[in-house]
Length: 532
Picture (tube, rainbow, N blue to C red):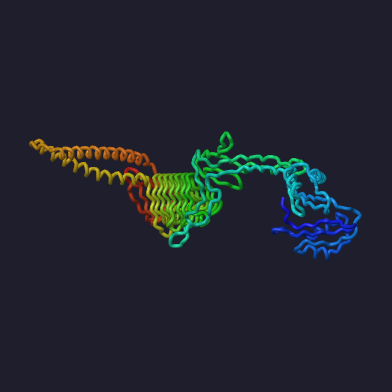
C-alpha cells in the first residue's frame, strides 16, 4: 500500500514528546484537526494548543510541535474501526506508532476487529498487504460482509392496453375528433390476456457480526383474476373465456361480454363500437354513435345520436332527437317516449308516446300508457299498430301503414328489379342463339371463334335462367309469408283524429272525422272498421 494522505506521528526525545507532521503527497488528503485531537487524547495528551496544532497541520513541509514530558519511551500504533449502519461495510483507520515503536501486526489488526465484534468477512490478504506497507490516516477495508442477493417480485405482462388514453385525435386541419377515443379493449374467446412472471426469492447474506442478513421479501404479481378468464395449469397465463372486452380495474382483470359506460356517451368516451351488449348508465349525447353486436340499454336519454344494435335497443328515459339521429335494431326498440326519432327495427316497437317520428318495424308498433298517442308520424309496421290515440285534435298529419313488412317489401322490390334485368338478358341471349341456329340450319359452318362465342352465350343463358328461378322461389316464399299476416290490424283504444291516413295491404283510408274506440282491418280487399 502507498501512503498518500498526510499523517502525524509521535517522537520521544530525552523524555520530551513531539508531534511530527508529514504532509500529503500526490494529491492525498490533509489531516483533519478533529481527528488528530481525538488521536492525541487517546494517547493521553490533553494540554496542547489547538491553535498551534491547526498551524502545524496547515504547513506544507514536515514539521513538529512539542507536546510536553512523557513517562513512556515510545507509543504503540492504534486502530479505529467504523461500522456502517448496514453492518455489511466497515472502514478502519490506523494511527502510527511513535518513532522507534512497532507497527501493528496481523494479529493486532485481527484482535482489534474482534474487539469491535467483527467476525465475518475478514480480508487477510488486505491485512497482509497492509502489514508489509502500512498507511496511516487513510480508510482501509479489512473486513466486508456478504450482501444478500435480492430476489425479484412477480410481475405481469399484459396483452391489452391497461391505461386507455382518452386523448382525442386531432385531424389534419387541427380540429379535434372526440369520436375516436381508445376506451375499449376488444378480446376474443381464447385470447391470451396476461402472462404472469413468478417471483424469485433472493439468497441470504452475512453481516460483519456473522449473522444472517435476509433479502427483502418478494411479492407475487398483484393481479386478481375475475370471471370469464381462465388461468393455465402452470399458473403463468390467463386466457379469455368469452368474446367481449377486457380491462384492468383497481388491480383486477375483468373480462365481460357487456360493456358498461358509467356516464354519458360524449366527448369523454367518444363513439362506442363493441361486439357484445352495451349498457350506458347515462345519456347518449348529440352527434355520437353507439354500435353493438348485441343489445344496447340506455338508462338515460338518447339525443340526436345514432345507435345500431344487432339485438334490441332499450331507452329507459326516452328518445328526444331533432330528426337527425337514427336507431337501428335487429330486434326490438323499447323507449319511454320517442320524439323526432327515426326508428328501423327487425322486431316490435313499444313506447308511451310517438311524436313527429318515422318508424319502420318488422313487428308490431305498440304505443300505450298515460298518454299513448301517435301524432305527426309515419309508421310502417309488418304487424299490427296499437295506440290509445292516433293523430291529434290539431290535425297533425299522421300515416299508419301495415300489412307489409318493410324489409320484405323492400326485398320484393329488389327481386322485381333483378328479375326485369334477368329477363332482358335471357331474351337477348335467346335471340342470339336462335339467329345462329337458323344460320347453321341453312348450311353455315361456324369457325372456332364463333363456336366458342356460342358456348359462352349458352352458358350465360343457363346462368341467368338459374338466377331467375332462384329469385322467383324467394319471391313466392316472401309473398306467402306476407299473406299469412293478413290478420294484422290498426287499433285505437280512444280516438282517431282527422289528418290521419291509414294504409292496410295497399288500400288507403283518410280519416275525415273523429272516431272513437275502433279498429281497422282489411277484409276482401276493403278496409273495415269495427268498434272495440
